[in-house]
Length: 143
Image (cartoon, rainbow, N blue to C red; front, side, top):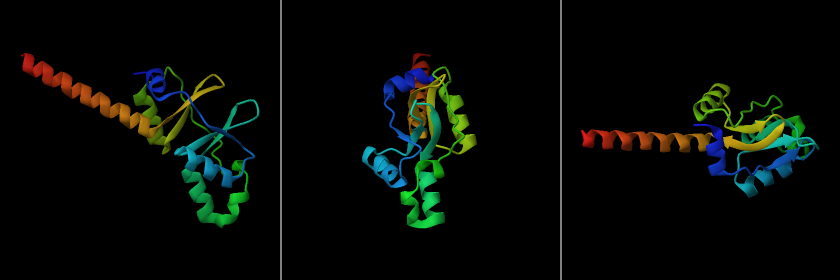
């Protein structure tokens, strides 16, 4: 299954943030939108990083509350692993597991199309397993 189907079901809305936004505002954006990460873009909507709850927790644990005034660029992950609509869900799940991250921007060239989370991937995988089990039960009953 390609990510196009998954992203079409989930939606293409992405909340982005500037590298110069304060971490205090990032906490608010994440909380208000009930999300776990923000894609960091420059003024031309080019991805320059990603900042997750994990990045924020590490920064606060190491430096204390003074980090709230720091810019996103000071703690963001700048080497962002992305995927495309042509990638399949299993490949994305593998990349997330190997890289130990939970959010992956979906791109077409330099254009940001959406974000896939590990929750989206797990939800899809559960549905897939349930479909396979139902198909197997139907097959067994038909024999």
